[in-house]
Length: 112
Image 1 (tube, one colour):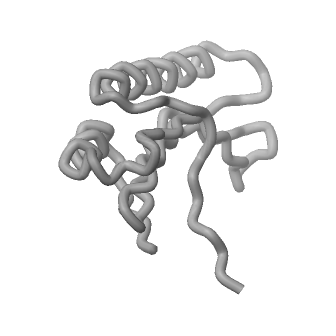
Image 2: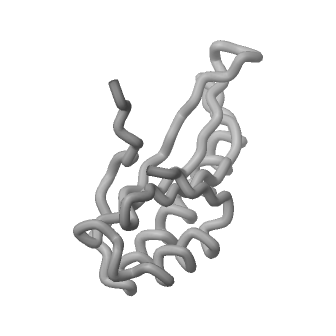
């Protein structure tokens, strides 16, 4: 199993479209991913992540949207709005392609 990674949602959608009949159960998972910063404990990096199993591979999109602080700032609103817009575009395009949109991230199984 390989993970095919994208950072541009148009490329991610184009990849799914090319192998549309191989998208497992026609499910695409989309979620916001908050990751802690190494600079400050009150700072988190926000990305939108979308994944789908296509054949034996996982196709993954990671779009960095910006930083979110624990305190409320105008930058938090801008970052969250960007994430919301990307999720909306992915959801709309996925629905037009006939995919069921679900939350979460599909990850490769760990082999023991």
